[in-house]
Length: 368
Ligand code: IPM
Ligand code: MG
Image (cartoon, rainbow, N blue to C red; front, side, top):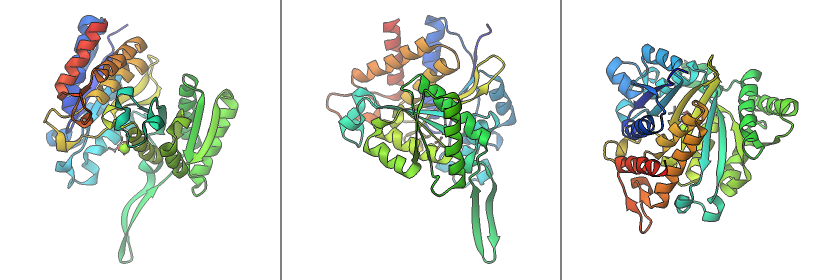
């Protein structure tokens, strides 16, 4: 088999710093575990705009379509706030998602034992929490037409359209059911069928797919607002949550913060299988570019490192190596190592971004 290829797009803000730590892991695995990747690196977001006047160059887009997986850091920053909407850093990320057709966005919200005290909720509500949000990523109000701002009479009107086709709902529902089969076999679908026709269709299609092909899955439906409430009340009632693009954006931030560790959470965005059987895939941390702390060694590289672990599992069939890496992360946390976002406990050892990366590599080496 040819060497698997990986395109790295560090992006903006803390993106390059956290990605440098992933590079250490990749290099270590190449040297010590016989896991070689053909790694290339390119620009996205504000960094691409600075170099090319566009948040994603066509050549980069073409490369992303060819590789086995893309690993992205983060995009955006105040420097780009005044830019025209069409060239904002976020447009680069949205173009990647759309053109690669990455319709299933997997966002695990997992509470690490060592960090349960960081949650704003009581410890017993979050300890051991492990849920997976499957967010539809290529349709809905993010991409629906018509959209735009125009003038009617003497005032401006802003328009976005929530639109879902049956097949778009069908395929993301299948992703959620497949995942649930490998977990606790439970899916909760969230929409607003009480006020939106697209929500009515969503509910119907998800139920039909379940009844036809996944009778073993326990499926429930919830209005997304009630879902938000239940997520904060007793999150452990959920296993897999499947929802649309916008609700998924909101609910995944909410779920991430429940765990107390936004700087820890990875994500995978998966599309249809390519010729080699691997899904089109992009992996990225859930957190943003955090421009306020960029360049100071304060960023937590764990979300990006765990995103690479997801790549090992979902793109490269290296589930065991992924688990080893995840265990190395848990081990450094259990040792009390904390980046700036996680300080506050007594007895914790403050570490910089790069010290955290080094410690994880050392744990890997010790476990090998
Ligand atoms: C996310 C982010 C993006 C989104 C932004 C950066 C475009 O919030 O990945 O959740 O809204 O999808
Ligand atoms: Mg978001």
